[in-house]
Length: 189
Image 1 (cartoon, rainbow, N blue to C red):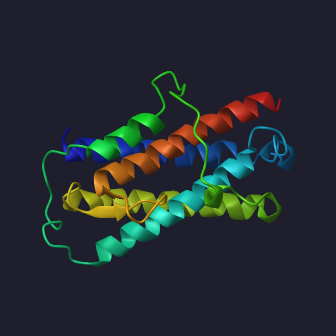
Image 2 (image 1 turned 90 degrees about the horizontal axis):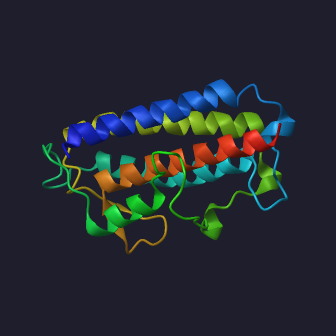
Image 3 (image 1 turned 45 degrees about the horizontal axis):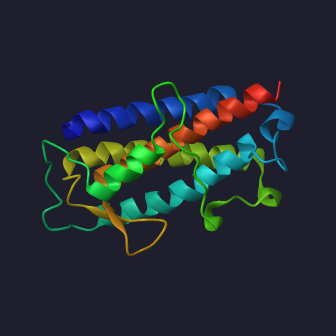
């Protein structure tokens, strides 16, 4: 796949997810925003906070990498090829075209939100700010080699994925959870 094609796709998904949150969650009643807490499913609030916890980790790491001048990473590569491990994670996380999931995944303990700390306005503001940062990072990524820049994983520092795979994982993880929010809200009526 062409690098530009991948980044344009990720950009569109990120803007779409951000717009969904702005259009559907900001004016949502607290009852519906927190619906599901305490059951086996997360509430929309918990899902958004989980995304905040995950995204801020990666956004900080990517910004740090961009602030350095890495050898071989400061030029744009025409074609992007996913790494073996990155490709595996993307296939595992990416929603299917019908918005179903290949499998259910458990969040690492450190990325499970603390319900008592959730404030609707703060959680949504942070999500939108993170999405804006992600959009900017995707734009900046058009000028670098997506395969040479390495980003540490949130799971372990020993695991590093290339920038293209990392951005794909972030965006598809977000999409996966936006779909989850839609299902939670459909059940809250």
